[in-house]
Image 1 (cartoon, rainbow, N blue to C red):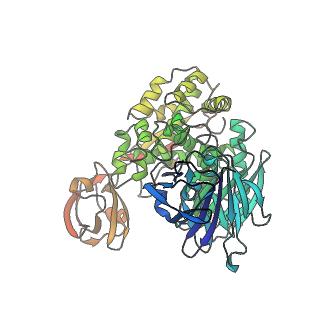
Image 2: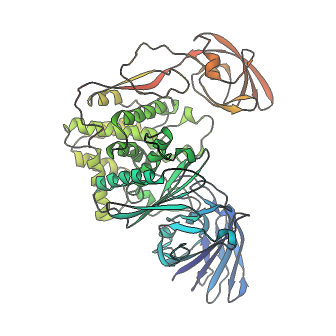
Image 3: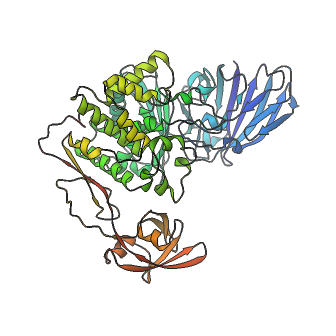
Length: 595
């Protein structure tokens, strides 16, 4: 075996994993070791090496000098024979991107805990996962999509293997007293592992997940691109996120989003969880296998730039909710309501008028993943606007081919191409394949949608499917749009400051101050804490402003750091940025219910 690792939860109380790495034949000039600086699927330099502590090396039972060369690289002095590294990793990141350990559970991505050895990246790896010591952990188990070599049947602790380092770090591991439910989708074994404190109907969760998986497998064509798959879900309070892997996904969500026992309806929280499951599973094809050439192979020492994230994240974001409809979990009205909310979200960001989608993709490392109080005014999301581009492209293809083809055909062609050559896509290749498959001149559309900040022709394209789209003022602060029976085009905007707020002990923190809004014109900024509106404590801004009319002036009191700001703001009407969709009766269109 080229590389042999062991990992143990050495101190659950202190959140430390203990790792050893053994090489039989280290490099003659001194072996170099590295830890990734980022994890595929999350495009930000995260400096995982900062969590490594107490690293040492030995050979033949004797210490070996090892020197840190940079933030994530070490070099051991030359030795003859076997070389072993010992190190600890501090693990207290509750997200899906890193490593976590406490007395209730453990979790890790290989990018956080497994050093690579230069020259050994393409060789096979083996990792032994050891159980933590102590009576309190006797019932702990292992869940992972890694290939088992010699493991305990009940717990799963033992030895696993990977064909190479890239595969090793693409299989996260869950540890603890979780609940596991198995099912098959199109004949392929799947597991759903749930950890955390909750009370829920896991049978329903698995049944609904199975429908999503089978629809997606059939979309691309059987067989599935893996021989088994593991969903790892940790539930807690006020958390949400997911990260795709080649045969598994790590998910975190609110415990209340799980389906309740006895419930028959799909709550908004459960709908969001199903959308997350659908999104990460779709990535099994779209980015874990089909991917930009810039990611083949990944260079985990630095940023890997591509203009194609709109295709791999945006198109996935289009299909995640569409799969819920096509799999029979929600009806057309519920789906169109989700579309309306996405349109509303994009419309409310002035950044869509300043940043193109290709630029959004390219600068994900420094802009999308490092957002600040001005981000809504400066950037556009390749997830949300990317999903609207996918929607527009799907409808355009359907219209111009008289319903003979759709975006589904493009995705299947891209998949067939990957199966044939296994190569990543050049920056202009996605567009080329779409044009070849459909026989359409799509360049004008892509120029507008990807390389300009012009508005997408969504109203025109939705009309071809018998759906009216209108933008009207929001009726309340919580109004994000939806499906309506009739559209009031004369709706009058409420008085607004043009801010997004969050609770603060002193009043309301201005999370964002939007371009062109009353608060910005008055001189307030993101990060300021609003303490009073016209002499009354700032508490429920929507209710407080409801007594005013657009054009009225209000006096605002706010703290910027420790300095009091007193400004007069002239209230503006709520802009027409809230999407209303209306199905035209008897329109007879195929989309969205049918592919």
